Length: 358
Image 1 (cartoon, rainbow, N blue to C red):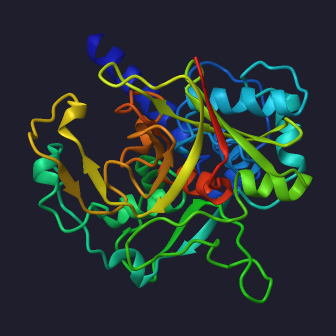
Image 2 (image 1 turned 180 degrees about the horizontal axis):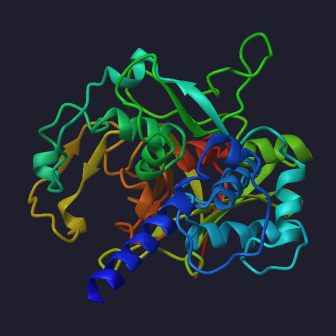
């Protein structure tokens, strides 16, 4: 009897896994429609579609993972507030209708892996200790899989789930990715490779038509100020008319170095920054007694962008750990995913007000 019960449970588990895995195809995801959620789900095509649509609208769900979670809920709530919908922080039918009406393009698409995507250089292991980290020539990605996942704002697990039988390190291989970029080519047509680009620095590029820039172009609103909300753990961009035009989940401050409160402004913006650690900060786990300088790269402690603020040592920046954004503390500053930091850097300007709210 125990053997039969065990087999029955095992078969049930496999059937449940198959039920979740089977719909995770490009056609199923692009054709996904809203339905009432039923219990705990695995990788969900409807959630994936909503995450992509939120990102396109300027309301970042953070890392696209097809699972939802806190960052997804926060992005939904911000989108709902912006569009006068009931603020439930849940994917309801009205929110789904608003998301899908403005963006009819497929939410996943095929992408041919390029030689530049896999040529590296890659770093096999990145130490946590800043002194050892400073010995590296560049804080590159650790693998083509990591680089491709970040290029398309996805978790590595989702990238692999969408392409279970495809090697992610072979040029010419075709993979399914989130269609987050909508960059026109020089002839005004949409890039058949989804607008994604690889550069010599092995870094991610943000689509100039994504996020706050897309929203203010569509509405004619000009980005006027940035708000860092410590209780909500978010960075928000507001237009001159007071409307919210972009929302990004963020990790803000730490016990060792709490985030400030009050009004500041943008002083400078640096892409692919070198990171300089001052031992006076006394970050947890760091033993350096002298200043340490760490080379640029997407896995640099501040990622691909540093937006310096008018308070010495504070800034808004990227991260080597997109899956941890808003789920863990930052070392005093404001940490976004690399792609959200790049998007913010495109609309921020020197002198733009930045308010920290408790």
